[in-house]
Image 1 (cartoon, rainbow, N blue to C red):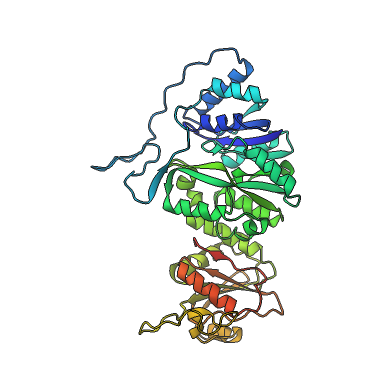
Image 2 (image 1 turned 135 degrees about the horizontal axis):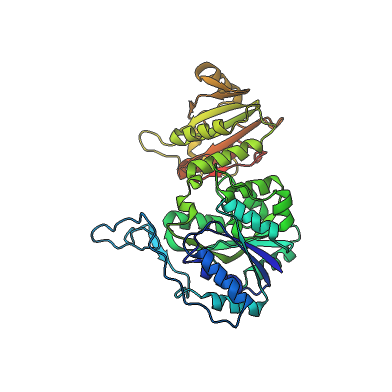
Amino acid sequence: MISVIMPCRNGMPFLPWALDDLASSSVALEVLVCDDGSSDGSAEWLQRLHTALEAPDVPDAPDAPSAPDAPGAPDAPDGESWDPACGLSSDTPWVQQEPWPGEDAAPSPAVVSRKMCAAGHRLVLLNSGGRGQGAAQNACLQAASAPLVGLMDADDRGDPERFQKLLDALKDHRDWIGACSQVRIFGTVSEGMARYVQWQNSLLQPEELMQSRFVEIPALHQSGLYPRSLLLETLQGYRDLPGWPIDIDTWMRLAEAGARIGKVPMQLYGWRQHTLQSTRNHGRCGIDRLRNCKAHFLLRSLPKIRRLEIWSTGETLARWREALQSQMPKEARMELALLDWRPKGRSRGGARRKEGEGGGGGGGGGAAAYATVKTEVELAAEMDGDGEATSQGQAVIHEAIPCSSPPPPLDRSHESVARVFVFGSEKLRAKAKMSSEASSEAPGRWGRLDWPAA
């Protein structure tokens, strides 16, 4: 048996489908649902399901009236139509409606209870009193009785063979401590979220997932299967922080614990997109909060670093300075060097170096190779002469220095310097990678963190 934890706050009208999918699971489940202060009928629907499981022969009560429209829904502009489930104009070109196959009339508690009884599933209802998602998940985690724990959000969908496939993956990969799956995105899908899920689904191996955690969340935590001891004892449960989302915090701490988690190359989990989901509405899910989380765990991952170079440009560099400064421990003895990098890649006359010119294998370096390469000593001299610095505790934070040269090779004789490239522009990311690889004999000690959503 597998324990599945489901936090729920105002899960209607999607909650019945989520539980119906769990009831259809081919693996016996202990389903633990913790209501976290719902006010939309979710708690009542769950209680009817619980009653139906205890007395399967009693006829189901008629469905309760639908919950009223969410307050604050925008009025439709003239000539446009609005989907009440998403709150976005259906005429917006970057939004598509991607339905889940067969999702029409929601299943009743009686229907779900019959499936659960036939499959040998158990239902455990809990209540966290509105204390938040972390408290709800921890209540389920503590009450779980199985050694393996899966997750399910109250508004998502899942394949009936999902947990069997995850179990098979753990048997086939003895070095994995946990397994998650690729995701199928559906509902009101924006172009950006579709690209994000496509990127996320491309990461399969444990090394890929953990090395990509500073890019974005590398997998949906709720798509996975994990030892209860890993979540409850090693991580000490979930942290419901005001500063950033639970999902990215959990992935960062799993990486610190050295957990090897792989991904099954099958879309076994359905991630619903709608206007009421916390990803779109909760303040802690904003890009500034995600950046703070990355900065916090990046600094924790570099305990021996004495000089941290951030190569970026413009507003992105300014935001990362703020994030790193806000997360810098008072006792940190570190020099933070900010390089406002604007590589010389095109002459004023528009002539460009032909592709492949200057050598193939390890030669060229692309367009950025036009610039003169400065050594670390020369860069340090630039900073000493031109850049102002501020102190924060024992850390020294330099003002940004304009730079057009490609990054010089890092000194391999010690590990006290780390270099991070942070670019929102795809072209600049490509140039940074090209220049770095051209001037390096081997991959960096910490790897190259290529953040596409800085």
